[in-house]
Image 1 (cartoon, protein in one colour):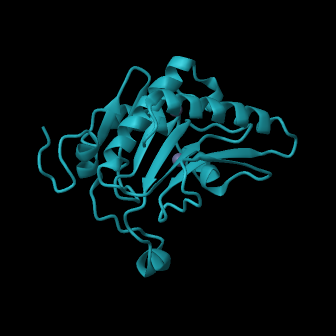
Image 2: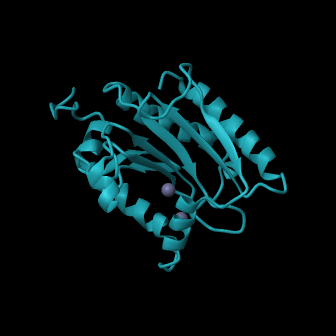
Image 3: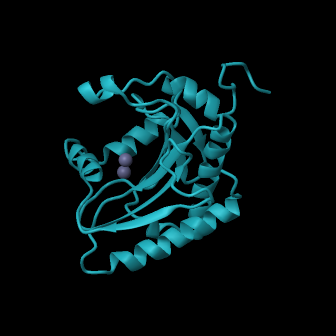
Length: 212
Ligand SMILES: [Zn+2]
Ligand SMILES: [Zn+2]
């Protein structure tokens, strides 16, 4: 969250280069790009960094999203984003992107960033679009910085031959998953997505006091 929009744009372009190169290797089925911040976010190094890992398998979480999408006619994420950018869960909207806090968020202040156009890969975006994406990331992380919360940030897009609306998920790690979560696979989130969105829009502080 200390990086400027220009620096974030450089990171996104580096991710594009690495993903493009690693994807060409015959054994690569998918390339993960993510950032962990803070101890509870699983960060292993003190200095600012992100990680790229190529896999020889299709990631189950992404495949679950792809399989769930098949239950709908058309892309459910296109419709979801269309509704959420006008809802109480909206966070930021620009020409080509919308970010919002998902209904039934798993994590405090969880936020998703979607391109408005149905896009399946980071490599499809123009320089201007990547800059817009960086502005959304900067906006959300700047708000999270005010409460100094650890987080993960990662890309979701389909492995070759599959379709899924590209998106970024930001999952702050304020709560601890414990017995209840592991027994039931249901997570308790003490902050409503509507409150989180109002905080992330900069309207209120974490106590709910209006911000000027
Ligand atoms: Zn879509
Ligand atoms: Zn996802």
